[in-house]
Length: 384
Image (cartoon, rainbow, N blue to C red; front, side):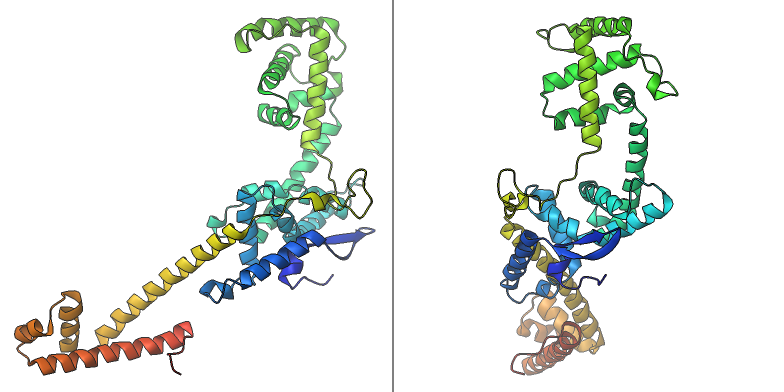
């Protein structure tokens, strides 16, 4: 498989497998159009210190990361998913070697990993110094390992056993994803608490949890109906044993769906339409103009500050090389703001001498700065 070279390809193509072997890079049409448009828009920004870097993948990785943070409905996540194909593949290959599982191949591990790209992005912090690919190459294997562990546990669990194992945070997240209201979530949470309180400690064999014990469900519903008076809204009705059991099984279904969501292709045909109308075509175009401008301005400001510091240091260095009298003249004229008449009186010189030596000192500093500018900043003096 040939490595990707062009910026457009890096942020718009995905790996395609055939019989667990890499076949080729497949282009996502909408991502490619969007990437080309962004490159064209950026080229119109004119010649700036930052424009020399806009063709680097690191610049665009940071740009799309900032887009993803501020514009959740944009195509940024798609561009970053394309960008992270290589670390995703190497993580999948490494996982396939370590965990022999006839159920999963390298392509399956790739799909599992790239489905967690949001987890990778949430954990990434550019201020720590590492670039996104380096971070992803470390994070993807950990994510895959955690997925396999959870899947192995879940496959051995009944609904109620899974419900006992899941944390309160995961439970609430699963219920929110299912679209439940705050009131309904509170009811389901209380039902789970009552179930955990009365069903005893988790068994070694998770299949042994009592799911058909009528007395158990009666006791759970009784405890729920007692506690709901203190923990839920006064208008919340009592629940029967059958309702509590149905609630908990439904909770487990939502938890499974949350932990292991189905992975759907953006290239899938939209329901009820012909195959050339894809789901990805309904995604909103990002409004990146302001963000791109802001990013460019930030980098330009940083570049200007850097050059100002360098210029200041260079001026100090050049002045130190002048003779003592010239240094004193420059100090009095520029730092203390004295006129040539005042300097003449203070140093006991004629005004012509003060003027001539100031001019000579300024020219020496200016010529040194011109030379430094040509060497350090690759700038040519005007007229040459």
